[in-house]
Each structure stands twice: as structure tokens, then as C-alpha cells.
Length: 389
Image (cartoon, rainbow, N blue to C red; front, top):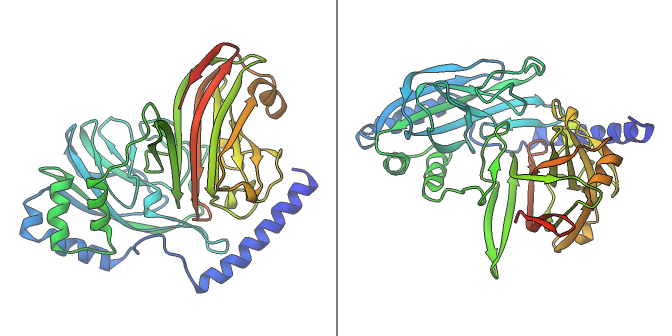
């Protein structure tokens, strides 16, 4: 870290500490609070005869930040619809006002199947695999594999708090069950929110999928404007990476082209330290596992290049501030980047191929909001064009 970067980091942390003191007097909500009121409300609603008839299995559990996988004591079958209603959260730093709500880190593991994350603190999931169902609360971090093994390189210490969760397996599906439950009452709007999601799910854009490490979400949606496909990004107190497979050679003439319009950035501080690492970007993943991400910044100069400040990602991700002029927010901007030259400047000796294009949205640290749109994404090398969006 250079002297300038170190001074900037200290200044940013000082500003965060001052904000944290102010917010201690006026806390920001990250969802419903954990505690006895949550459990009492859930038991009362679930006891309603109309709701009870819809439930095949129900469990109320408490989740801590340092616990392992908990068995819920029942099996699920492929195709079962499971609703999770959750309250509470974890503090990483009260001084810096770093808190992660229940929507950020509740994961389920059916049998030996792949792990899945709830996209919100009130949401339903369709099980792709069957077997004993397990649950864990895991703040943002990294897994060793898709079966839910914790990576020992990233111990989960220094985090406090708890999450209360109600897990329901429905007999006739989430839509029917939540409809009955909404008639019995609510707690903090959780039932209403889960019912709205069941009625109006937000699928990922066609051909894209969320990175399994961070889990699926509702951040990205596909729209059409005058026949033109667009991807809308709306992030609020969450994180998600959307990926598109792109097997493409990396040569001197390889270009990434796209258009984007950023309407709101999720952070108003320099994004190059962990507590403020909230941003919007488009990225390219290469066959060596490295990714180069072109980002909007609220505070860093255009042309700034830095390694990701987050554990795990500091080994594989490099950021390039492409846009930082607040006067350009709300405007469509056309971009073109020489990927091989950019890789050589930002990372080192370039590999031979590109493997994926990503869209990244992070708003979990400062719990802000980011809004952006993307269009006309393509990889180009001479006459060869891979249309991505």
C-alpha cells in the first residue's frame, strides 16, 4: 500500500467511525429484530388451523455467527418448496456500523446436494435435491466447495449477534401456504414479503446465472426497451455476481464492449478498503482464475487500479476504476476495453482465453442502494463477435 493509499484508508476509517457514532443514536434497520417476539408471532400464526393444514414440517431455530450446519430434523424431497422467515443479524463492527441482516447469510443444504442461499429474509426455495435438510447462518465470506464445507483459511471470528429463523416445508407449495399464513397475521411484514416474492419471482436474465459462492438473488432482472435487451441491476443491502459463460480467445485485438447507465452508486466513500467496498461493475474472468472488473467509483480517481480488499477475493480479483464523474450518472455511456493490454497492466502476464463475463453489485457493507442498467455487451476480436447481451 502506498503512502497515499494509507492516508486515504485512515481518512475513510475516521469518517466511518464518526458516522458510526451518529448512527448509534439513530440505528438503521436491516430487518426485523430477533428475540422472543419473533418466535411468539410465528407460533401463533402457524397454529391457525388453515395454516397448519398447509405445513408438512416446521422448525424454529436460533443461528449464531460461529456455528456449523444444524440439522432441522426432517428430510425434503426434490421439488419441495421451503419458506424461510428470518429476523436479526450479525455485527462485524459496531464502531464502523457494519451489520449484516438476516437476508445476507441463511443457507440450506438438502442431503448431499449443493448449498442454496435464501435471497432475502422472507423467501421461498424449491429444493433441487432431497435428503436431510440442514441450515446455517454464514456472513459474507467463502466456501471451500458447493457442498457447504467451510474454508479453514477464512475463520469466522469477531462477529456477534443472532438470527431467528422459521423454516416451513409446504404440502401444496409456498404460494398456497403463504396465502393461508397471511390470513392468520404477520410479523414485521415478513409473511407479506414472502408472499409477494412467491407471486412475483425475479428470475435471472436469460443465459446468466448467479455465482454459487454468493448465492442466488433478486438483484438483476431482464427488460426490453424498443426491442433491445437490457439487464437492470438494483442492489440494496446485499451482494450478487451474475455470470455468463464466454469461451473466447484473448489476443491483442480482443475487446470488451458494452453500454451502461449508473443511476445511483451504493457508496459515497473510497471503495478500496473492506468496510466501504460497495460498488457496481462489469468484469471478465480468465482461464487462470483471475478476474478484472471495471467499476464505477464515487470517490476514487478514474484509472485507479487496486486488488480487491476482501479475503479470498484479494487472490483473484483486480479492480479498475473506469468511471467516477458524478455528472455522468443517469447517462448511457458506451465503453470499449483492450482486454489483453489491460490485463498486462493491471495483473501481469495474460493467459490465452476468457471464460466468463460478470456483472457485480455490492451494497452489503454500507447498506446503501445501487441502481444500474447494462446493454450491448459483447466480446470482439476482428470479425469474431460473441454477443452476450
